[in-house]
Length: 403
Ligand SMILES: Cc1ncc(COP(=O)(O)O)c(C=O)c1O
Ligand SMILES: [Zn+2]
Image 1 (cartoon, protein in one colour):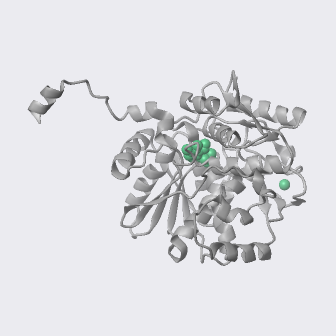
Image 2 (image 1 turned 135 degrees about the vertical axis):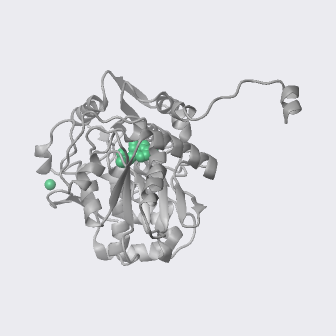
Image 3 (image 1 turned 30 degrees about the vertical axis):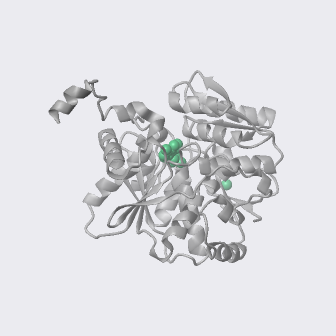
């Protein structure tokens, strides 16, 4: 579908003819290392969207990107990865609670939704190299999706402390990995220079507008699954605020097209030690970053969330809420979720489950809840091993004599 860019801060609209990253006006206020200024939305004509959406959602079949592709700005189908992104299962957890299991995507995280769209757009725009800065999942996801496409080189700028399992994924998928002496901000600045100086297509989260856009696809799947019985609350783990914004954008589109009667309440779940978006929202919207942020959940450990402006505005606009949980609760929730549902999720994803547990304690009414599980537990085995002890070997006959 044809689209324009619209700045999430000043509302200015720009033609979608060429690649644009951020609003030229608002980005003048950018302070390096802080929240991205002038993040752009992808906007379609409302009437066109409504017409196409009604047709798309009247069809049955797999709830994957190919079903919804007309609701995205992809020009050439050849540029879409054939890997199985999306069509994520919804598991029943208890009478009123469901799990949206995004741990089974090709690289085992929600990030594949954004990588699928950004790689398709890189190829649509005729670029042969894509670059990204990431602490882990976005980079391993980009490496994975790029490996499935012909003619796209992938360069990843990662901080030196990126987790080993995720670096191993990147290397196995054949990406060029630049492990920077420094943190995420240094990696981010290097990736921007590669884009400015070499013209490489940049996939940085909340900088490339197709990241939020790609991440809206889960909302379509949720609607397709629940239809007239949408959940009252959706629990989303939050770091930079791109996943939550993508989910809101998808729901907002469905709402404006008349397909859902209201936008469900989204509860932003953060770790107590890394809670800029939750705190800024509770404070009424003023973004205050936290240079000392720290949590065991590496994927949501963020000092200056890049998409905080959009995420907090969405929470305010649609009556969202937030909840914070301790690292101890995240770890115990991870184990409870795995042993109680069969879904093994990494600490960041388990934060949504821990957030749901805490939020539920303070609620009187029985409501339908959906918890978004965004990354697989095998990505961070060390954290999981804090919860369990590998048993000492025993002789089979000794064991048999005791049972
Ligand atoms: C597994 C997982 N969950 C949640 C998040 C949070 O997403 P966002 O940074 O868009 O808020 C991330 C981001 O890296 C992630 O990898
Ligand atoms: Zn602007």
